[in-house]
Image 1 (cartoon, helix red, strand yellow):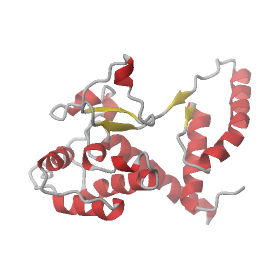
Image 2 (cartoon, one colour; image 1 turned 90 degrees about the horizontal axis):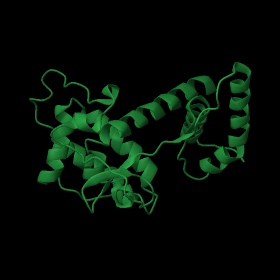
Image 3 (cartoon, one colour; image 1 turned 135 degrees about the horizontal axis):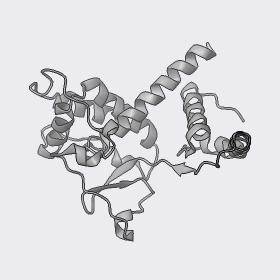
Image 4 (spheres, rainbow, N blue to C red; image 1 turned 180 degrees about the vertical axis):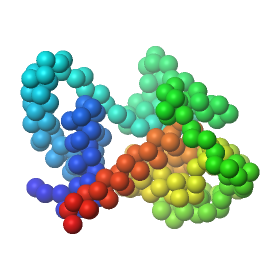
Length: 218
């Protein structure tokens, strides 16, 4: 079997690099998950061999999971196919729209400062929601107060219209054809303070991987 799609090949290459370097088990769609499973043992053997030669300890594998918004209690939980850790005795901090730093214990993940003038300008609510509706096939209203509050929060943090579009494009590609996940293509999931930056970072990494792969493949 081969991977014909250029974007899928780049995403697969990035996943293999992350797993080999940091032990992050990727959450890949079919058929990429099948390809990864077929070579995972070879990657582990290679890593263990390098670790043995350098006298280090084998690394602990970690599972990286994005977050989704749980409608039942208004909190953000990991994407586990409906499994809510808050119902299993695992405390999950509530999203604090007014204090985004509470959602980013790591200083490097704190929201970026607003560029001069961005916080004072009016967010392009209509353009953002029109783009979401076009790409995801949804019918959200730009005039909804809850939606405007989410967009305004990210806009005041300095994010641009193009970055909103990048997040929308990335999650539409991930979720639109997934019956369980496509319902999360909505403002309160995509633009939540605890989700947006992570989604954007992943979208930017994927775009860079596609660009880099195209340079070497061409």
